Amino acid sequence: MPAFMSFKSSTSLVAFTASVLAMLFTMAILFSVGPAYAQGASDPESIRGLDAKCEQARAARLAPVRRDLAKQCEQEPRRGTNKEEECRLETSTYGDTFRGPRGAAIEGMFYDLPECMAARAAWQKWEKDQPWKK
Image (cartoon, rainbow, N blue to C red; front, side, top):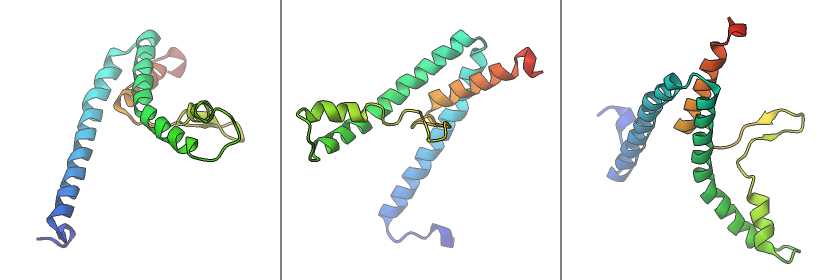
């Protein structure tokens, strides 16, 4: 067995195999779904539909993260009378794109989902096909 494949236990081998399979599955989805979305989207309206799908997928991924942060926040000592509402409001924009101190956009979380990658590719293709870009 090669040195890079020597595992101390079968558990680490299983974990390694599972992570490799997960990575391959993700890559397969990106390469199969992304071009299909990008090919069918040639007008801004259909691309906006892809953007909406991206935002729905992001919202689904961000919801449990925000819920966990709100629970952590509620356990901290606070002066307000309604901890639950304050914490929910405080964490409601977590993971969204925002402007940094010098005005540059700081990209939000989960824009690496297949739906978002497809929307980005479609917008890039659309922009490249515009007459002013030729």
